[in-house]
Image (cartoon, rainbow over the protein chains, first blue to last red):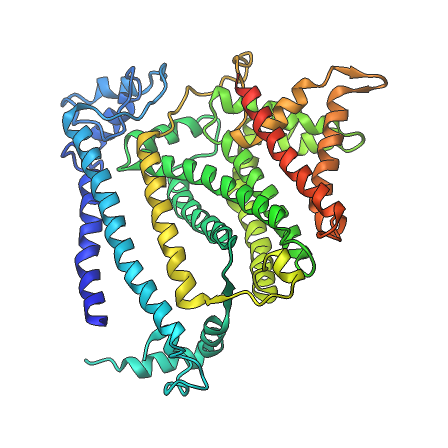
Amino acid sequence: MRKIRVLYLLVMVPVVLAPLAAVAQPSGVPPTVKDKAQIEAAVAAQAAPTQQAKPAPAPPAAKKPAAKKAEVKRTEPIVPAYSGIREKMAVIVFYVWLWFSIAVLIYFLRLWIKEADRVYKAKYYEPEESPRKDNPMAPVLGD
Amino acid sequence: MKIDMKKLAAWFDDRLALTPIFKYMTKKEVPQHEHSFWYYTGSSILLFLFIQIVTGIMLALYYQPTLEGATDSIGRIMTELPLGWLIRSVHSWSSTFMIAFVMIHLLAIWFTKSYRKPREATWMTGMMLLVVSMVFGFTGYLLPWDDLSLSATKVGTNIPMAIPVVGKWVTQFLRGGGDVTGDTLTRFYLFHVCILPLVIFAILAVHILLVQKEGMSVPLKDEIAKKKVPALPFWPNFILREVVIWLVLLGVLLTISLAFAPSLELTADLMAPAPEGVKPEWYFLFLFQTLKIFPANMGPVTGEFVAVVLILIAVVAIFFLPFIDNKPEGKKGKLIQYLGVAGLIYAIVFSIWSLL
């Protein structure tokens, strides 16, 4: 049983983390801003009418105009939105994955709960009746 | 190198004295009855508090509590940092969930009368936690420093002015001067990330200690009938059930945070007039509407003063509820039950009215 649990964790952890990593880069743009030009462009992007909640694309080579744009005061609110079919699909896929993962986890938890209830009803860990009375941690950590 | 896990466990057990804690966990039992579901609201609050702390620390890494930097730094979090908008959204929504669950938890305790002897202090610390949670929300609301949050904070910090003698001082202390300025922002940020967390942890520690000391209450009718209520071990039977609830709540939180991420308005202009439709967070709406319905003057005093005094009396009465409702099985107990229902209806109706 313990081996199955470990195996389940080994499978589920990457499954849980993978979509998160995918959503982190919805448009294939690297998540970290690497050079100054990108920083300037991202700041300048705040002046755009409607902002998208994703890293700004790489700017043109000229740096001076970007620096000037950065000083422009923002005139519109920043509203997180998904642009394009790719991002919208990514979100839908994430929802499906999220609730599917939760359903699978709950299924295994229900099995665990049933087993725990059965062990309790059988008084398996009762100090007076249990052969494991010398190990007080047994109900918590297992035998 | 092979690690001997048994020796390692024994080392930790010896140094940290884990055996008594495990023994306690295995002995601790949770009563099972028709109202057991409400027990889960307590641990759900802890889940949301944990999410608040984690996302709050992540946001604090980039947030700048200054007039020039507040809005822009949040803009940067939302547009430049990977998943920054989602972290902000989760932080915002989990605060809403947390306060909602604190309220549900308190109402459940009220209606099941679990505050009765010997759990009076547990109720009082719970009330303190509700107030601190609401102050958390109030201080956090200003941090984006947009027009709406500035105006709402002006209205909110103006309310204590109605209290005689100390009111003006309280307002000045909250604002760091006569008006809401950059000093208020710095002050609110300090409260939000430093003072309030210390306060909430201290009260929470006492609250949890009291819950462990007295155990979970059984229904009043079973206590009167001296009926033995069936129980379930806390570990692992109850905690596993809690994990199921946490997973569902996490799913709901993430779904809502993704679908309804909060936007960022324009930077607040201190010289601009207050925008129309200024409203506080949803959990202050009924208080906001209560203040609005009172006339400007009521005889020798202002209407706002009467409203503030009435609200303070209500808060103090709820705080000392276990002592007021000292015979929960009698007529007075039933009356207080009806008052609780009336108060809930009042809060819902006034909140909706405020939105119209």
